[in-house]
Every structure is written in C-alpha cells, then in structure tokens.
Image 1: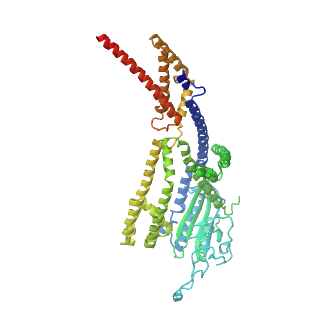
Image 2 (image 1 turned 180 degrees about the horizontal axis):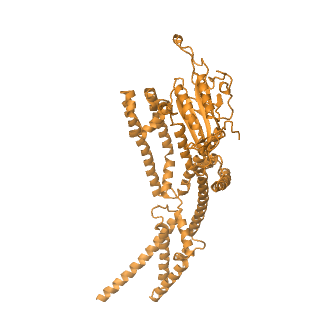
Image 3 (image 1 turned 120 degrees about the vertical axis):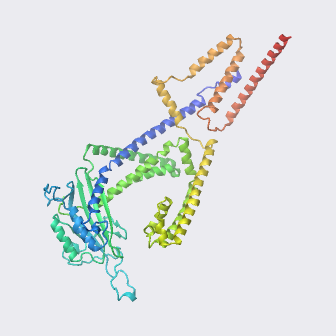
Amino acid sequence: MPVASRWHRGGTPKHNLHFRNEVQQSRSILLELLIYLIFLIILCILTFGTVNPHMYYLNKLMSSVFLDTSVPGEERTSFKSICSIPDFWKFMKGPLLEGLYWDSWYSNSQLYNSKNSSRIYSENILLGVPRVRQLKVRNNTCKVYSSLQFLMRECYAKYTSKNEDMSDFGLQVETEWKYSTPTVNAPWHWGFVGVYRNGGYIFTLSKSKSETKDKFINLQKNDWITRGTRVVFIDFTLYNANVNLFCIIRLVAEFPATGGILTSWQIYSVKFLKYVSNYDYFIAVCEIAFFIFFIIFIIQEGIKMIKFKFAYFKSIGNWLELLLLVLLKHTEQYSDFYLLTYWLIFYNNILAITVFFAWIKIFKFISFNNTMSQLSSTLSCCIKDIVGFTIMFFIILLAYAKLGFLLFGSQVDDFSTLRNSIFTQFRIILGDFNFAAIQQASPILGPIYFITFILFIFLVLLNMFLAIIIFTYSEVQDDYSIGRRSSFKLCKPIKKICNNILEKLKLKKPQEGEDDKSKKNKDLAEEARKKGFDENEIQSAEQMKKWKERLEKKYYSAEIQDDYQPVTQQEFKDLFLYTVELEKELHYISLKLNRMMRKISALSY
C-alpha cells in the first residue's frame, strides 16, 4: 500500500548511520586520549624522577651547618645574623671554618686522610676547595654635595658594571689582590641591592684548616674588605654518595652603600650522575619514549598548521599544544658546578611548567561532559570581559601600590620597594597584612589607605568579577538548554561499545535485536488474525506502531530528554503525516464506537 512504501525505504536507517558516526568518532577520541595519557604518565615519571626526597633533607642539613651555627657566646656570628665587617670575619674564622673542615669522628678517631678531602657530617665530601671572591666599586663614582665636602670627600656608589673597580689593591702579590676578568658564559647573580657579574678579586681556600685560618687572619689584617666592597661570594660543592646528590652552596654577603651587611644564600641539591641504579635506567627509557612522543606531536601539529593554516591559531587548545612543544679531576682547584647547576635548575623549571600545562590539556578530552563543556564555554565567552576587568583591576592595584610605596616605603618593609608594594597588595587581598605597621608609619593616612583599598577591591572589583562569571554561566546554561550549543556526548557511544563487549563475552544478556522484534510482530499479527481482525486493520496497527517507536526513539529517549532538538523540514513533514494517520485511526475508532453504541441501544429495547 502507498502508506507503507513511505516507511520501508531501502538503505540503512538514519539513526544507525548516526550511531556509526558517533562510534567512529568516539573510537578516534578514545585512541587519542589513550595515547595522551601514556605520554602524560611518561612525562610525570620523567619529571618526578629528577626530584629526590633526600634533596630537602640535605639542603636543611647544610643550612643548619652554614647558616644557623654561631660562635658560642656570640649571637651575631651566624651567617643569617651578621651585620658588620667584624661580624663577617668572625663568621669566616668560626662557623664557616668549622663547617668546612671535619677531620674526625665523634669519638675523635680519624676515619680518613684529611689532607685529601673533608667530609661534612662524615658523609658529604667537599669537592675541590671553596672559593671566595669579591666585587668592588671605584672611588668618586658619586658626588658629595659641595657644602659637605669638608666632612667627607670619598664617595662609593652602588654596584654597577660601569662603577666596578678593576685595579689591583692592597698587597698586590696574590690573586685575592688582583682583578680577574669574568667569563663570558657565567650567569649574573641577582642580589638584594644589585645584579653582580662573575669575576672580581678571587682566592681559593686550602685543604688544611690551619692554613685557611691563617689566610683569613692575613686578609683581615691587610683590609681585604674595603669601603668599596659591595659583595662577597663564598662558593663550594659537596657530594653525598649515599644518595647520589651534589649540593652546590653559595653564601652571599652584600655591602650596600648605606653600610652594614645583607646576607643571602643559594643551596641546591641536584643529581648530575643520572644513570646509576636500575630505576635510573628506567628513567632513561622514559626519556627515549618522551623524545619519540615529542617528535610525533611536532609532526601532528605541523600537519594541522598546513591543513587549517591561519584558522589553526584561533584555537586555545592549539596554542597550549605549541607551548608544550616549546617548553620541553683537579682536587686542588675550585670545582665550579654553579653554571651547570644553573642550567639544570632551569631545565627542571621548564619540566615543571610543561607538566602543569600537560595536565591542563586534559580539559580538551573531558569537555565532552556537559558540566566541563559549560565551564570551558563560560570562560571562552567571558574572556573579553575578563580582559577589560583585568586592565581596570591592575590600574587600581598599581595606583595603590605606588601610593603605599610613597607613604610607607621608608618605614615598612612590605612597602620598601615598588615590587614589594605590588605583592603586598595581593597579600592584603588574601588576608595577609600588617595593619599595625601601616598605622604606626602614618596614623592618619594609613587607616584611610587600608579602608579605601578594601572598599574598592573587595566590595566593588571582586563582586564585579563574580558578576561577569555568573552572568556568562547563566547564558551558557540557557544556550545548552535550548540546544544552541551542540556537544558530542562521549558517554553514550562508550556505553554501547562496552555493552557489545560484555554481550560477546556472555557477561550480559543480549538486547532485543531487529530479528527478535520482527518475529514478535509476526506473532502478534497472527494472533490478531485468529481474533477476527482483517488485514487492513493489522497493517494499519503495524504502521502506527512503527510511527510511535520511531518518534519515541527520536524525541523521548532517556539519553536526550534534557536537550532540545531543532525540527528539520523533513521531520516536520513526517510528523504531519503521522498526525494525519493518527486522525484517520481515531476517526475509525470513533465509527466503531458509534456502531457499538447503536447495537447496545437496539438490544436494550
């Protein structure tokens, strides 16, 4: 019949083709996710393999020896607390000397030849000998006001490469009195009051404790530290064979133009000898695998760039992927490990940043979940508003930072520099601030500064930021509720694939297939014929049942009942035909009911 011909067209049903596309897409996504998870696991093993829990304890041990130890009875002789040149020499002849030269066990028994090596805490070997160097500035690098020149004629400015003194001084017989030119590749040191380059007036210590002590006494006696001295570096390296770690130590004493001493230090525990244990060789295999993944990802991104051209750079995910690709024997001499340590620390920092962005990239794969997709859509939709808000926020923040620096910079440490003042604003936002110090510095302007900052930042700007996020999130939710934003659901195809696998393994009862449904329909039709229904009624009932199943599957299935699906022109035509058939069926039922009512009425009379 003509009506039936509309519902028995040849070819694969539309929903089956759609399901096949979903399965194919889900398989490709799962494969990509699996490969990326393997890469992420290898990257984490590689990065965590460079970190050893013993690093912290070794650094802590060296800090207690060289930073916290003082001469008995004199509190200001530890490195952290020295504030004058006499204190500095007391530290050099006391805690530093005692910390560097260990020649006996706790029972005073000698375990090794102290002339060949020094072992701190009997486990940490001193490699080579320590090195001490200083940088100076010339006289008359600044000007004294003319009216005050009768009080002081010499003037030593702060350290810069232009002000540096390169002339020999003092005894002029040893290297400590003669200037040594800096090496080209050596990194500069960023201190509290200056940035210092390599070179200067250098000398190395002796293997003998007594000779080193005599050296310090001689240097102090002949004024090795002068008014032009701006910084002194003490560098040495230790090695602990028990944990296979090198400990590179730098103690820095800055002599600012204001007088006094500012101390700082750098203690790094690193692993230079990488391949010693079986685990180290496993890390080497991971490094090879990481290099292979790196090459594969470069090829993939290159293909994408060629395929999509400028459109490639419009995706934030692509920028993140590009970012991931970009980021990835003389015992009597000083052993300079500082340059090597500098680049190793730089390499570890790059790895840390790479791991961070590698984990962030997982959002690309979990965005198929509605909640995650709404989160990413919210951030992408409000990015322009957030950028505008950020500009306004930093304008106000910098204004308050400069105001705090000018008002309290000379009295409060948190505002002593503009950089400290900027970070102090963020600390106030997080609730970490010293209101008493601000109030003491300025009893009137201090509270006004603090109250207005709280009003602008907390009550205005932070609420504006939350309003931007909440308003955009509500709009995104509305778009998802009416189907404006289509999102591919990964859960449904994965569920069907898992069900198929369980059915093949006979761990789950197979679902009713098309053959079972056809057989069931034939049994129902045969039963209807036995009850006296004609063929037209049976075919019409079968057609209505097919209509109902098709529409319920498309519009009332449990998987998509929360998503509004726009109706196409063909679907509207199908719905109209179904309505016509339904009207005919209702009209037929109405006629049969009227006929039955007339028969009942006739029987009653």
